[in-house]
Image (cartoon, rainbow, N blue to C red; front, side):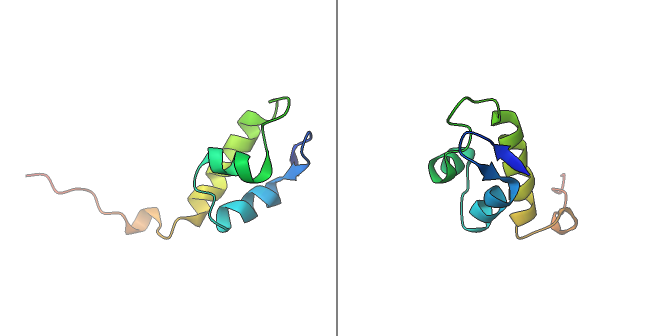
Length: 70
């Protein structure tokens, strides 16, 4: 799916950039120029970035243990 029409950036482009190390939305904008034109895609681009960033984490929610209270 095309996310940014101005710079022809797809959701796959965003996923690849995250896998290759884009750690922030600003990094993504520098790398792909997404959401730097008219700005209409910003919300969708940010949501897509966040979704792929969560998938790229090296752990799952099951790996996280609640903090001990005491």
